[in-house]
Image 1 (cartoon, helix red, strand yellow):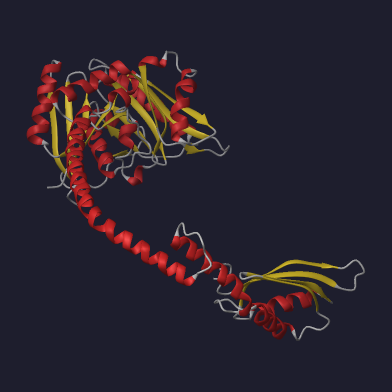
Image 2 (cartoon, rainbow, N blue to C red):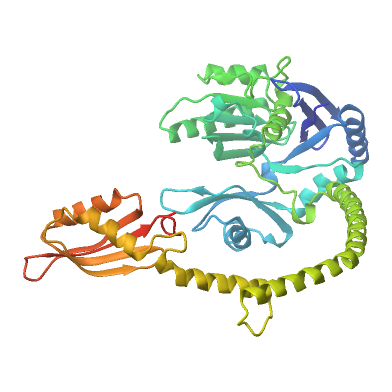
Length: 468
C-alpha cells in the first residue's frame, strides 16, 4: 500500500487533518477529519486514535504555526552557503526584531540571488515555548511530526502551478492573512489577529483593503484570489466577487474525489506540498532541540541492529582471514624467492635487492629511455620525426629551422621564414600528418629588420601522453 502524506491544521480547540494517498494518479484524498477538544489530554488521545487507526501509513506529517506568534524578516547576505547563513542569522536577525532571540528558534528558506548580487534569505523566528507546546502532544501520542512550518508559507508548495502568481487569503479562527504570491513564493503578507467573536464585516474590510494594496503595488495587475480557512463562507465569497475579484474554487492540483470544504484546504495544501516535495519556499522548525524524537528512536533501533550485523560480519571476516593467512604466508614467501631469483638472472650486476618488483620496474624504465633513440620503444625515433617534418615542410620556400628539440612526448621547432602566411602553411601541413597532434604556434613575430618572421611551433607525438 502507498504511503500517506498528512497536513494538520491545529487551533486552540479544533483539529483538522487531511491525508493524501500517493499511490494514485491524480492524488486521492484518503481522509478529511475534523475533531474538537478541550484539553491537551483530549488532543493527545485524538492524535493517537487518528494516526493509529485511520492513518497508520503516514510517511510525512506537516503542521503550520500561526504567523502572528513569531517574526518574519527578509535578510540579505553576500554569500549563499547555508552553513555560513545559519551562523550569521542570530546576529543579523537580532537587529531587526524587538526581542532577544536566545529563547527563539530560527529557520530560513533557500537563498534567492538578487539583481545587486546579494542573496535574499527569508527568515523566521518563533518562541521555543510556542513550538514546544505544539510538538509535545505529538510526542506524547507517539505520532511523528516531520515538518513544523509557518503560515502562510506552509500552503504555497501545495498550490496549483497556475497559481504561482495570486493573492492567497487564509481566514482562520485565530488570524486572517492576505499574502501576495509571486513565482511560487510569498513575496509579502499582511496579518490581522481575530477570534471567533470577530464580525465577518471586519474580516471582509481587512481582506479588501489588503487586496487593493497588493493590486496597487503590482501596477493594477489582476491576479486570482485563493480563499482558504474555516472563516471562509458564502457571505465572504459573495462580498469579494462583488468587489470584482476572481475567486478560485480549487487552489490545489487536480485530486481524485469531490472538492473539500474550504476549512480543510489549509491542511490539504500542506499535504499536497509534502507529497510534491518542494521545500524551497517553506520553513521547518523541526530541528535542533525540536528534532523528532520518534524518528531518532526508530533510527536508533535500526542503527543498533545494523551495527550488530556489521560486527558479526566483521568477526566472520577476521576469522576467515586468519585461516587463510597461515596457508598463504608460505605461498607468498615462495613467490618472493622466485621473484628475487628472476631479478638476479636478469640483472646480475645488481648487488643489493630490497624490493625486487620495484627495482625491476625501475631498471626496465631506464632501458626504455636508453632504447628510445633507436626506436626500440613504441614511440617514433628522432630521425623518423625529422624525416616526417622535412616531408611536410619541403614546399615552404626560404624556411630555416634553427632549433629542433625532441623528447618522447613532443617536438619544438624554432626558426625563420619570409611571411606569416608561410607560418600558417607550416602549421597546417604538420596538422595533416598522422604522426603529430596538438600543433600549436606558440610564437610568430616579425624580425627587427622586417625581412623575416621568427616562429616557434610545438606539437605532440601521437602515442605519447601529450598526443594520446
